Length: 143
Image 1: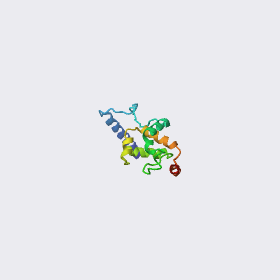
Image 2: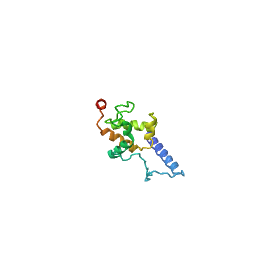
Image 3: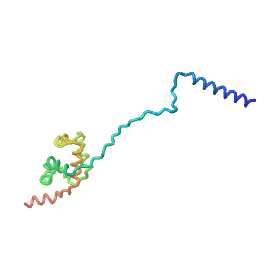
Image 4: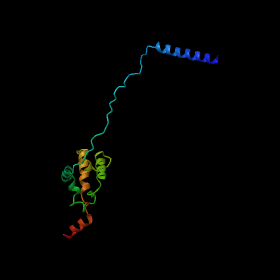
């Protein structure tokens, strides 16, 4: 008898729940509905491949006056950046552009350059043979 009472109670409660759910005004059934399409914006852009020709042109027009072979052996405040890793040079140039690194002249030079220009310059400098400052100064003093 206990089993019959339990079954009867279960069937009655299930029927009550079903009848109450049928009485609601909310007809939001999710069966068969398709969720709306989500559009996700991503910052994935094509990786930029630096142009060595553009980098050389920028170096010749903007950089070599201070970072060139003729002045570096004698003006120690201008760094010898030939042969440096491009990632290092690029970080320094970006820091100058964002004012994270302070040097009035460098900041004024890089402000007008795009990030692609900075990448071109860094790539070009990284392909150059490092300047042997000792040898260059010896050549100068022998003249």
